[in-house]
Amino acid sequence: MLLKFWRAFFLGLNFLPFPRSRYCCICERGVLRFVPYRGGSMFLPPLARVLNVVGSDVDHFECPHCGASDRDRHLALYLRATGLTARIAGARVLHFAPEKHVAELIVAHQPALYIQADKFPTRAGIVELDLTRIAAEDQSFDFVIANHVMEHVDDAQQSLVEIYRVLANGGFAILQTPFASTLTRTFEDSGIQDKSARLQAYGQEDHVRMYGRDIEAVFTSQGLVSRIKTHQVLLPEIDAARYGVNPAEPFLLFQKLLKN
Image (cartoon, rainbow, N blue to C red):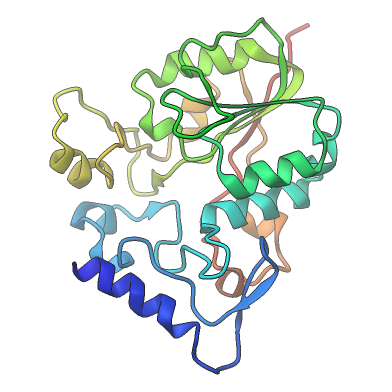
């Protein structure tokens, strides 16, 4: 009840006649205040706060106009800054757990093939696919997008094997996921099954691990090559506070390059 009130309060703020100092790059409208996720950082589990988890900007999460999340906005900015949006034209794209606004961005750039997939589809147009057993031929895609998905996958290593397999040579994998900047190693334990325990250990009830500072090594362990760039490098002109994104979250971009 408290979280619902908190959300309604921040939504209501945007009806006040004050200057809009923030901006949603998805709907291109001014915003007085982005709506926090589940009440914001003050409601995060204690462990997530002390581990300095890097991920969504939970205090400036949802656009009150279009509903785009900070992860939608940040990914759109990253795609444009790297020139990858232009490379989507005519490309083959596999998008897991597709976000509405990111999907619209991809469709607008006219890929040759665009498959929206999920292990448990919840709306029309999304095909049932398991990231650990992708029903597709080798080198079938130029892009695999899994935006805040890897923290939900039970067998992360097998999913990386599959992503590498279905990517064409030179293809890109976008694997945004939260990680704890104070953890030296990724943490997971099969004994942590209860939703409440997962919330406390991993920051959310349906997460199955907390990635650590070894995230780059983990994601390149099955053959992908890191193309990770920071917000500061890719978006130096973007005021993170104005756009409602987390400047500590890098662009977790990887590429498949076949060995000679």
